[in-house]
Length: 331
Image 1 (cartoon, rainbow, N blue to C red):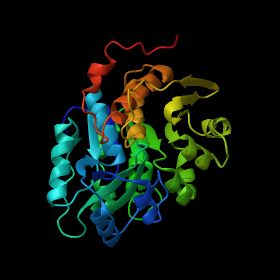
Image 2 (image 1 turned 90 degrees about the vertical axis):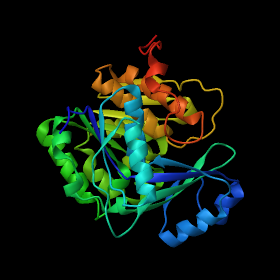
Image 3 (image 1 turned 135 degrees about the horizontal axis):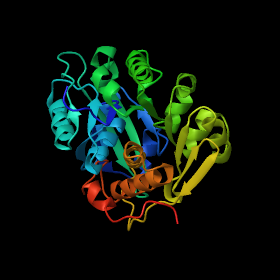
């Protein structure tokens, strides 16, 4: 293994297909705007055929976080699975070009590389239809236990949890981290996924050190209807809980301490795809640099502001350049 990584991110390897779309198109497929829906290959083809001009970009929740972390200057390994196909080669090129170490061998035969069809409506909200492809077959053998054992944090996307095919890989990653003293960070990923897989996600929470969720995910995980109650409930189980609130910023609970951090300013919100992923990256960068929860949340806000200012979930500007002169502490 090369030099020890600071963060190992584990998730689905996906290539995003992003297309500006009207609300009526989203509704025509019976989709709830702003959520992620898993679709089979036939459904993916029908939706793809209905889209207008689109932009392809490597994505996947944890992979986006990994790319943003590398852009901030952290050393990162990504664990995910691609097929030996065109989209797989796109993904491998992009993740490595972003400065992330990616060493899982492409799968030959079987499903192809996963793709996510992202319909971006005029209000910048995104509705995602995802065909996971071979990424849904990530196995314990694909998990880099040496990298996890050497890292400060292993970050796991919630989309891997609650699925018989990938639960063993999640279990191996978490078990290795707990045995080796590596922090376990976890993302709720999507409100509909939380609703669908609540029992599986709940079973994992007591082994999580840093929980990321938006307000809807936090309420779903806690089984309550407001963020304050969710923070109270979840912080009893996870040492650090970071909840994003969109334009209202974020709130972080560490034990009995709660801090609120405003969103970073952005001239125009173009696409919210990856906002939560980039927030997690900024926050985790603060964690590996021992900056404290408030400064970490401010880094998360800065990273998210860059991501939402353009189409796509990967940074167009080196994030380390954006944080150089910023004041990250409280007032």
